[in-house]
Image (cartoon, rainbow, N blue to C red):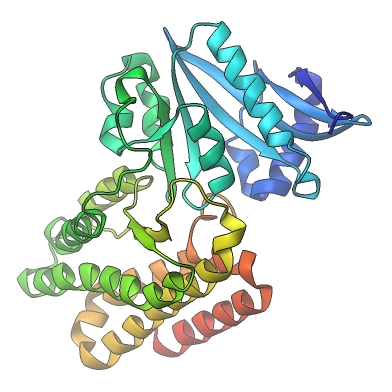
Length: 345
């Protein structure tokens, strides 16, 4: 660990840090990574770049830790902790007392890192409002990331729980009901389709919860984490009559835990959720053929397709969680999904 150096970011090292980000998140991340006028730091060992952190001052007293990533082959060297600590110190020294960061919902290594620095996983509304208008566009863009949450460091939230825990199941089902209504209401598909869609989306969400619970519960006490990131995007898609998946997930009840300890239970739980979508797809084909042909086939096929994508920005969907657990199980899920879509579509 002593051989790892944390150095200020320069434009010359950006191609190397981008290559590391692609190893960590997938090729698509190149499209949204900042490329110029970077403020941040990178980690290097023997002239090899192993990670980086990008930070940005977005408004008076407000800063965003935009990206932090480490080469997957260099995990275990505490590089992420060193990069984060350097970034926190830099923002504090500049007087950025209100800070934001985007964290994937199952990335508990980052959870614990930010929590110990005083960050909280607040609601979408709390992360969007009550701050300077100059930083709103970036914070709003953050809220689009499905299966991610915006974590906030703010003295006003000192007494707020580390994670939102109240009424998570009810919040998730209520939001699903709104999405279901929007599929017909805003796309003007008629009253019959309205009632079917209104029931279908909460039903799919509830089925996912039910089938995943026994697998997740084998770990020990768990709670359901309502979706945070992606909900504003789902609202926007809802107004044009389209369903964007925001389901939530089971996590351990502890505030601090390690994702690799939960992965053997989260992997099967997410595989069960993924396969339940196929069950709904096939059941709708046989039981409600008219509704299936009127649009549910497209919506359900789209949701199933999204679950198969294992890289950013879909890396929080079922497929990537299953892939981390077992490549063979992920391959089986992809084959079953593709065959089912080809047969029933």
